[in-house]
Length: 413
Image (cartoon, rainbow, N blue to C red; front, side, top):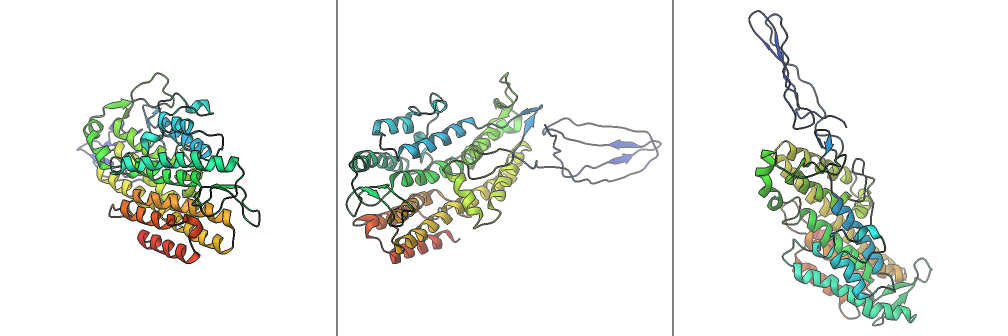
């Protein structure tokens, strides 16, 4: 494992009457031991400044040669979220089966996702002041898919205004989209809603892993070097070597990168926030590196107990991740308008369903002042506008362009 120095400069001081004393202070494998070397010689004073590799160039931290980074629970939950998205498009699904996966973390075809004690349902909107009502919306989307969409699809019903069923593009580019009577594609609404209520809420929400209300209560333990967790890498003995604050930060990291390469993220892994971060990279060049570097420096700041620097990096993560949701919400609304104008109805309903879920997620964003791009009430007013009458079937290109402009103005992007 690489060794990283924690000082931006090393000072060499030579003092004395008849001999030279060279004093070097070096911290390795932060935090580490102080090494002092004294060499005889004439009296002389020298100041030597060198550049050192801190923070590390990748999300890698060790203590006594063992990794202090782990977020296995987040990786499991992200895998469960992917499976839930698939279940919300599977006509063999049952309400009880999907709820078992969502609320109990059981019933997945991938056995590694079962029996872990991890689940997505209890982490959905958990940090929001509207937790109960928003969680109920996800439950309602599950019921709508099972009770209304699946029977219509199994009966090979053609979807239309007021009629749930299958919808295809005239060009054949997208076929057999499963829509409810208002044209909503339920798995897209469900999964895009999770980007805000699950990913963002857990990472940046009040009480989320990068929030002061989560990190500051364990400051005393971090200052004292009290280890509350055992890192999993190269630590088979289960030796406690991770402070609670370090692990909380890692868990926030895991909710974004839990399915990606910890040391060199490819970005785009999974079906939730990280997937869309890759798409936004083309619109906001460098955003992926900005977020990854902020996670690294924030973690390094925790190790060195620099909480001002930690909070600065947390703010960067909050603001930049919110841009992903804001940008994609506006993009899919505009895309839906274009698809509608082209008469590609399945592609139109698909894009607008993505936009609907991302609008729902806007309430979980944070701008530079810590405020959401849109409040809970503003979000629900916009969603109601989209669902008015026969829902997506009744919307016009002009209406969608107007709503997209409102979203763009709210985000300031």
